[in-house]
Every structure is written in C-alpha cells, then in structure tokens.
Amino acid sequence: MTLAGKTILMSGGSRGIGLAIALRAAADGANIAMLAKTGTPHPKLEGTVHTAAEQIREAGGQALPIVGDVRDDSDITEAVLKTQGEFGGIDIVINNASVIDLSRSLELSAKKYDLMQDVNVRGTFLLSRAAVPILKDAENPHILSLSPPLNPSPKWLGAHTGYTLAKFGMTMATLGLAAEFASDGIAANTLWPRTTIATAAVQNLLGGDQVMAASRTADIYADAAYEVLRQPARSYTGQTLIVEDVLEAAGVTDFSRYAAIPGTPDSALFPDIFLD
Image 1 (spheres, one colour):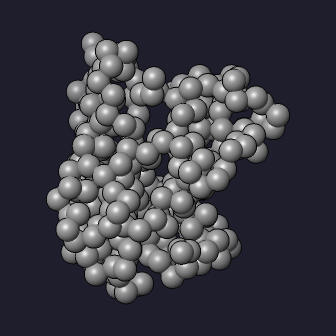
Image 2 (tube, rainbow, N blue to C red):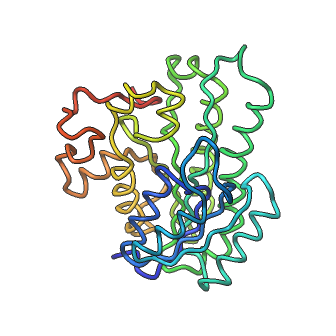
C-alpha cells in the first residue's frame, strides 16, 4: 500500500518534523492540507505554510495551505471542510502542532501552561474529532499524534510537569479515540523517537549546537510515520509507537544515515525525553 491519492490533514507542518512527514507522503503523490499559523515569515523560524506547500508540490504531492490556529474552533471546522472540498475526503489526520516549554512548575507562566494545553491537548482532540465523520468513509483511515508513551516515572513527571501534562494529554486523547472509534475502523496511534531530532525546538530549547549535532534528522520520523500510515487501520491501532521500533519491524536495522552529522555512532546520540 502506498499513500498515492490519500488525503492528509495536518496541524502545523511549516517546518521540521511535520514538513518531513508531508514530503515523504508527497513522494507517493499524496494530498496534504496543512492548518498552520505561519502565513508570513517568522523572525526566528524558517518557513511558512506557503513555502511548505511549494515543497510538497515539488516533491510530487498536492498541497492545500490553510492559515489558521488549531486553538480556534472555527479554524478547525474550516480546515476540515476546505480539505474535504478540495480533495473529496480525508484519509489521515496528523496531530503535529505542539508547544514546548520545559520550565519547572514555579517558573512556568499560567499563559504558557494554557497555551500548551490548548495546542497540544485540545487541538489534538478537536481536530481529530472534527475529521472523524469524514474518516469513517475512508478506505484506511488513520489518526497519528506525535506524542510519547505514557510513562509515569518520577523522572519525567517531576522534570517539567506542565509540558509533561500536555504531551501525555495528546497521547491520552489519541488512545481514547482509538478505543471509541475502533468499531468504525479508524486507527489512532502515537509516535515518538528514542533520540532527539534536529529541529528548531532542539536548537533553541534543548541544548543548541551540541545537542543538534548528537541528534537524528527528521527523515527518520518521516519514514516511521510513512510505515504507520500504510498499516491496516482496523488492526493497527491504540498503540504508543517508537520510531526506531517501527522501522526495525519494517526491516530497517541501520540508522546511521539518519544521523544529523554523518558517521556519528548511535551511542553518541542524545536520548529524547519521556523514554527510559
């Protein structure tokens, strides 16, 4: 099974992991609609939803850039209706939009706490829910959220409680949808990497150039997502998946080509958060 002709509705995706996933699907000839805030260039971040759409088309896919906010109910409704109107349906929802703030509890502002909850948890739930009636008509419908397994270890619960609540909330929403709509044949899974991925968030928030050099590229996330989205939806659902495990199951055992700096051994890569 390929993703040729499949329609993906993604939150975010102007850059980074979301864009990498979109480009991998576009190589098959998929249709990708992106609901993202970045309609004009950001002073600190590369790319807009429009430049992402250009790259998708160049990669072989069809693109529908939608400037909007996953926190806004009307923007969500509009994105779902526009995607259906443009491409005739929705096969896949990817909950990629996410806000990260690793502040400790006493330093985390209420405004940033609310932002993480609104984008990560509420956005994941409401975008997925809005698409469900259309997903029910798809041949192999999938919901995929970029969030970690639930790991109530004190190491993670106490590290950055606000962010942990938001990312675990994404996962719980996804697992709940998996259970609720299993009888409709809609798969809902999460996907998370074992190592850090070379993105702006890692550069700006997790350790700068040093951690970027010890990360893998977003291509590894994209290749794993591609494998997940081609699985039979009725049987492949309700899982908190790990990027490297998905690829190993697909026969990939050598991850060296994914290193941000070629030749970096796996043992020198920086482990991502939430996994023991």
